[in-house]
Each structure stands twice: as C-alpha cells, then as structure tokens.
Image 1 (cartoon, rainbow, N blue to C red):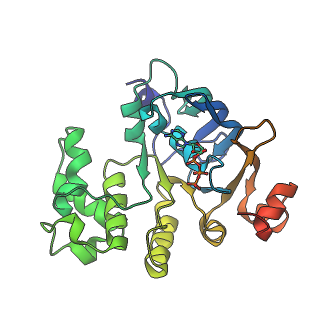
Image 2: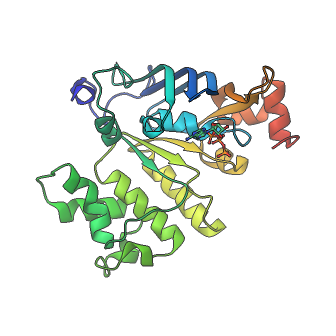
Length: 273
Ligand SMILES: Nc1ncnc2c1ncn2[C@@H]1O[C@H](COP(=O)(O)OP(=O)(O)OP(=O)(O)O)[C@@H](O)[C@H]1O
C-alpha cells in the first residue's frame, strides 16, 4: 500500500521540521453545502493539537479529513491535500482503509463493540491478520490506555459492562493496538464526568510520547491543559452560507494569552459560543 512505503520510521523519526500530518483544506463540501474553506493546520509529531471554535465551524469535519473518514459521507467533496509520509492521502492511488491503519480515531461517545474486553482490543489485529502474539499486544494496548490493572482479571467480560470512562479507555486501547502514528480524538471526554475526563487527559499526555494526537474539544480549559498547539476555527456567514475556516493557529499558550485576531479574542473571552 502506497502510504506504508515511505521512508520515515514510525515513532523514532525526528519530530522537528516538517509536520507529520500537513492538513491543507482549500474547500470542503457536503453536497452543495460549502462546509470548510482555507484551513491550513500543520500537525507536528509527538504534539497534541487541539481544534476549538463554536458549534458548526467545522472542527469535526476538519479532524475527519485527516484520515479520510468523511469519504464515508455521501456528497463529500474535498479540494486540498493532507500530506502524510510525503504523500497526499487524497491521491487517487491511496487506499483510505490503509490510511486509517496509520491514523486512528476515537469518537465522542465511547463505542466498544458488544464483545469481550479482550476481543475489543484484539479486533484490529485480527482484521489486519496479525501473525504475532495477540495476547501480548492486547495487554500492551490495555497498559498503554491505563486500563490493564482495572480489567486484567475480567478480560472475558463484555466491554459494554465497563463504566463510561473505562469504555473510552477501552476504545483508546482498541485504537492503539495496531500502533497507529496519529490518534484523532473527536471530543473524547464530552460524555464523561470530570474525574474520568482528567484520567483521559493524563493518559493523553502519556500517549503523546508515542503517538501524535489531534483533538476536537469544546472545552477551552481542556485545550489549555492538554494541547501544545491550538487551531481556532470560526464560521463565515458573509456570503449567506455558514462556511467554517481557520482563524488562527499557534502555540496554545500564546493563542490564549495573546491572540492575534479579534474573533479569537472574543471567543476566548466568552463573547460568543
Ligand atoms: N455528514 C454531514 N452531512 C452534511 N453536512 C454535515 C455533515 N457533517 C457535518 N455537516 C455540516 O458541516 C458543518 C460543520 O460541522 P462539524 O460537525 O464539522 O462542526 P463542529 O465545529 O465540529 O460542530 P460541533 O462543535 O457542534 O460538533 C455544519 O454546518 C454541519 O451541519
């Protein structure tokens, strides 16, 4: 598969210089609806990049561009590029299923499969016909997701029997078991209580040593706590539509402490939501 063939070695290449994932959305449509324009978001290795902005500005849409999840939506049309391992993942020769093997995703609602904890985590390995020791990889992923100690004695229990926070960590284990390079997280804590949220945030800090993370969050404090870089998006209604675009991108602390754009200032102050 073309995506896999590029020279960069996962997890060991120097993170300086070019972004690991260079997202350049010129125009993005759902049917006739112009959903996002002019958004260049470079995502750097071993950093957490947060996407913030008011509802409907295209945060999730932009995130889902990064592993071609929007391809599953009828009428979706993309103009631009997303470069990963020196290739544009939207090039005709690229298989979107293979892209998702390298760029995994965790969703807003924890969504374990209705099967055992073990099988949830082993699922992706079996799908990829992994020939090594599956039990070892399952344990490794559950440890990586800070869940092993809580579930090691009940691996045959149904994943749906776990608490919401545990289910989300199970989904993270499921996403990392195939060792992706990038993890996309679409509001991963929005269904969780503050304690479970904190656990996921702590986990993200550990995970970023090994995986590059992009996260959509409505929670500005969360972006401040976890993200190295932040992209602020807003909605352009000037032409009668509602098209999202990138207003400002930069170091999280700088963006919050001294935003350059008026829209960013007002959003951070809470003048609009
Ligand atoms: N599958 C889809 N089909 C058609 N339009 C869509 C689809 N998904 C999103 N949209 C539209 O694209 C725009 C951006 O949606 P998106 O969910 O990306 O925004 P968001 O910033 O993540 O919003 P929220 O914070 O409310 O989740 C919205 O106007 C939305 O209605």
